[in-house]
Length: 278
Image 1: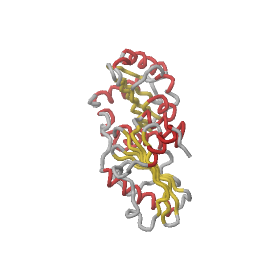
Image 2 (image 1 turned 90 degrees about the horizontal axis):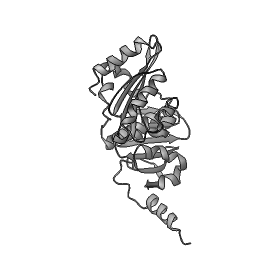
Image 3 (image 1 turned 45 degrees about the vertical axis):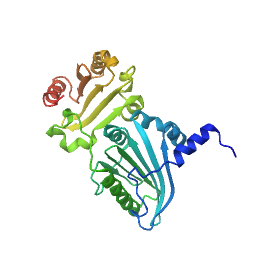
């Protein structure tokens, strides 16, 4: 059978590339395992695998992904290891993808473990590891596989903006989300997505805090495209209309919204700005 040009390109980029430069686990790392499938996806080939779901990864700077289907000690796993263009991109995908996290395991990077999925990020890498049984054994094995990847990728965590490196955020730092592009907003912050219409290249750092009075929400928007700088003032006004205390400074907009509002929001805003280092 003669492959079409598109089919040949998909085959080439999903089958023939060497995975040796990615920190994927091997059979030696998982004694007695069977790697039933191993493919690499680069370029547009990711659309052929997960269709519309690929758009989110491209917004965060997708470089390539290795897919493995693994059988180990009677458990079955689907491993997807994504290499992004930057640690911010890897952390961003992780931050908007995790939910229902239980206690993690002995890896050295940000991770999230629940019954059927284990996720982590390290440097430029984001891992999604699915198990199909949800058993305690499968979860323990997932953490073992994650430890292999974390060790190979190195202990590299994303450097947060100065605003979030203050002492008051130490206990909640793993709850910071990095949102990039309209799909990221729709996925992680749907209540704010409409405010960012018309902006093309930006990153939103987002954190929710639980206070005695209720919940507080902090946003740091960094605009990367100089052509959008003029829109920063408009965005600050829109955030204010949405109930935030907000200030803009060229390519950055800081916004705060708390349960009590009013003076409390402005006090929080001043506090965050005073030690932000931005």
